[in-house]
Amino acid sequence: MPIGAARRWGAEALLAVVAGAAFLGFLGSTELWGKREQRASAEALDTVDRGHWLVAEIQGRPRLEKPPLPRWITAGLITLTGRRDEAIVRLPNALAALATVGLVYLLGRGLGGRPVGLASGFALASTGSFVVEMRQAGNDGLLALFTTLALTAAWMRLHGAREGGEVEPPGDSPGPRSWAFVFHLALGLGFLTKGPIVLLMVGLAVIGYLATARRLASGLRTLADGWGLAAFSVLALAWPVPVLLRDPTSARVWWLEMAQKMGALDIPHDRAHASLVLDWFGMTLPWTPLALVAAAWPLRRSARSERPRVAFAWWWAIGNLAVLGLWKVAKPSYYLPCLPGVALLAGGEWVRLSRLARESGPGSAPARAMLQGIWTVLFVGAAVGAVAVGEVAPVELGYACLGASIMAVAVILGAWAWRRGFDAGALAPLASGFVGLALIAYGAVAPVENPARGHRKLAETLETIVPADSPTVWFFNEVDEGLWFYLRGHELAPVSKARYNRGFDLRVDARARRIETPARRLELARDQLADWARHADPASPYVLIRGKIYDPLARDLAPLVEPVYREHDLKRNEMVLLRVRSDNAVAALPSADPRR
Image (cartoon, rainbow, N blue to C red):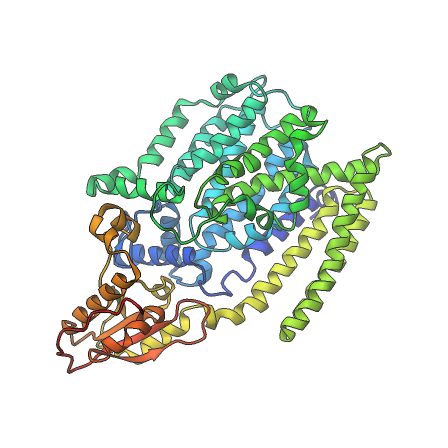
């Protein structure tokens, strides 16, 4: 790169390197641990292997809960490359993360100039929860990309592609009309990725911002586009309409799914929160202090002059947090598409504090104190963290010391860059240091956990125990979807299955709700397994069951089945492999003891 170009684009090149390392480094080093990426991977394999492009099937039932665009992209990559590994199923989200960082840089330049764009990009590429989530397979990564694309297009349409701090109110000098088409196109792609949630997140940010700027009507007219609306309609209806034509009950499944996510139904969910706001502090690490100061923007004296630059990102990050925080049921992943907005707030706040700290006005001392506080906390925290790791896990002490050294150097370089007059350049070393810690974690520390959290070993064991001429391995209730990804020589099939999902069956079946008690569930599970064992195909006599379900049933089922393999000391659901006894004709089993 010529010297002139290096000086002009060197910071952008560094941002690209940092982001590439954060999202692509050691992408396939860990097995599929999380439930969401296990499901996404199993759906993609079902699409490829069985041609279920419209509706995938896992656990023996159709998966209607999520729209198909991420599944289609992953299945297409598998088909084109012929690869079936962890990296290939995670690659769509990793690439979406790189594109999202690029869009945040572009939008940051529009909001506050090049320093804000760079600082926001570095902040997003080093936000811990964003890095972790975008390195997993699933729908949320692409939703974050299309949400960011829609909001970037909205800003460019409302204000044009100009840089600067002070910009005209929306509608005074709009950008090219093509941005309005991109806005609608991104909404359609987001809808095809995860449904109408994209309309809530984008709509709240845009409408909240326009209302703050007192240009709601004119701003919405500027964003309106007939061709864009047509593109959105085609994309939004491309999957639901064919599915409804094939199965009209799908509409009820979708309604129940959305109502359950918001906690509006009395169907139990796997995780409940008092408020997503409590998770926000962890989700925004390590830039939580900057995000907190920026979140208080409406209370600042300078709020009016900063309105166009800050209000847009504020409504994206804080407005959506307020709405999602009201949901009875929520997960941190729901907020993932709003983390780019947090990065814009943090990046803009870093640049503001960096410039204010160099001045001699009344606000310079607090600004310097905050910057020095961040550097001090990171420097001391790295050393304390290394000592703590040495006490808890001495085997990891070497990696902890390496991480502490990286962060110490990053803090020193950041402070030096600030003294030399750099704004975003002072944030870049810190972001690079955090990405370095992530690479150590993914490249060296996390893979050690694969045997305890993954399913590769279980799949290899099943291939060894179950004869090749027993084509099917049955499972009771559910089996972790990660096993689908690693098991090659045998098919997995359910002993019994829900029509769509457990929540749907409980909602529509009054009898199912009446029997939903621990004692009755235990008796029903035992009877289902016993009936299957009595009528099992002799060619496929093996069944998998979770250990916590099998243990209270073991005594009653002993005349029918025998355990041939059991997992122990794992950090996931432990499975038991049972084989039907050849002489299993027995009398009716006794009633289950409700005291167990």
